[in-house]
Image 1 (cartoon, rainbow, N blue to C red):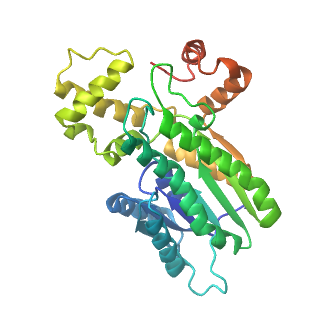
Image 2: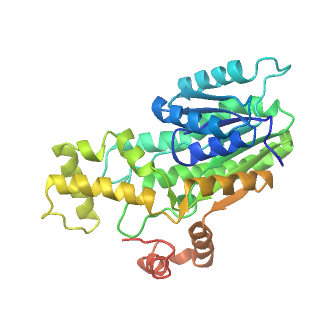
Length: 324
């Protein structure tokens, strides 16, 4: 797919971060875009920003939908067909970007099920439900492409030796495996549709803040019970926060999430550019960021050491990731 002009794209998680930048850059290229997100206000901002740079006649629509809820995904699909496929002899879309995701659900052993399952259901279930919903529309096109966002945690299931990271990693491994399996499936059954898996490193997005809100833990509004849970979790990571007040913890969690967004080595706009370039060149595997490329190389080079403290020390020493 060398150009996007006149094509129809579907983007999940279009309200902020990489999703917003995908919508903006696709719109600027003359692509009609339908996005979903859980935040109507964030999507309204994305629509405004996109239309400011898009050619006249470009359609950009926003739809509130939780990608972990299949009924909402199907309603989203029906709205896309109604608003973007009217007049088509055969309703179709050309691009599906399964981008929506949240973090959380760190420990399978020590934490409860609700956060684990919400994280997994958004990060994996959102990909699965949208792929099911929109695949017939991709197959009906003359040229289609499904782009699923995994993560470096789709080939390295860790945030360092002192942090449990099970739900997000499990989901992102599932996204990677599913997309790779689709390559053969599509070649056999719909060769005009391509598949790509996106593996971003540290990208400057609001995923940390959005994830906290999704789990009901807005840093500024943390309850005493939630703060006690955070103290326990930090203690398991070897951090002594006994001298920190509750307000210190609230401020610290907010600051940490903002630093993840503001001090990343790559911006969301840069990441979206890399992804779209990969789609144009039909790359099935799109690594996003020098840190992603380096981590990928090291995991392949030292697979037996990947989950030892020495491996994360190597990453930290060479500046690939700042594991604490």
